[in-house]
Amino acid sequence: MTTQHVSVTVNGEVHEADVEPRLLLVHFLREDLGLTGTHVGCDTSNCGACTVHVDGASAKSCTMLAVQADGREVKTIEGMATEPTLHPLQQAFWDQHGLQCGFCTPGMIMQSAWLLAENPDPTEAEIRDGISGNLCRCTGYVNIVKAIQQAAGSLAAAESAPNVAAATTEGQAVTAEPAAAG
Ligand code: FES
Ligand code: FES
Image 1 (cartoon, protein in one colour):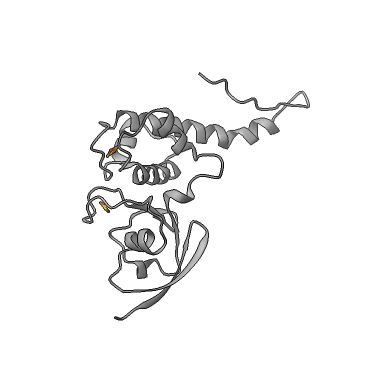
Image 2: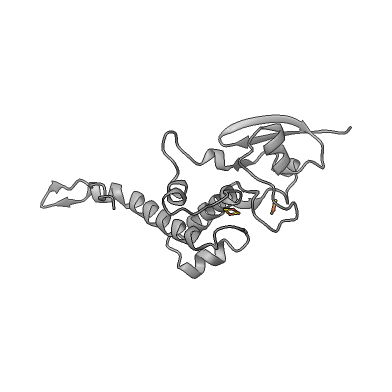
């Protein structure tokens, strides 16, 4: 069996491995690294369940070979939370009940994260277009869209919070208060 050496940084950790040239990135992540949050729904680039980030861009990991990830940075759903805090998208999917069986959810969140990085304030139409490569059999997408809208708001608030804290009124510092729940 011919193998090729790869060095792939996944969720900030460097992984060295000898892999078959035909090995798909999704199988490398799931079977070699045990990162089973990345799902396989079709293997034919249709469903988006396998979506990860490669060098910051959204990619369907069933359409890439592991050897193509050599020397690159991959982020999976396991790398999204900053323990013990969920990523705003994870929190929003929880809050808005943006999932039922959850099979599509990791890929949906990775795609949404890329979407919001590219367009921090998307319209509903832009959200629906942005996740059009990710299929969900359960939800009808309504709560997924709500979750992405919530996350966009959370991320924007987090982005502006330091600026608010730094603002001054008549020379006096103004401190940002967390928004009331409900
Ligand atoms: Fe990759 Fe469906 S498993 S798109
Ligand atoms: Fe079941 Fe999306 S929640 S496929």
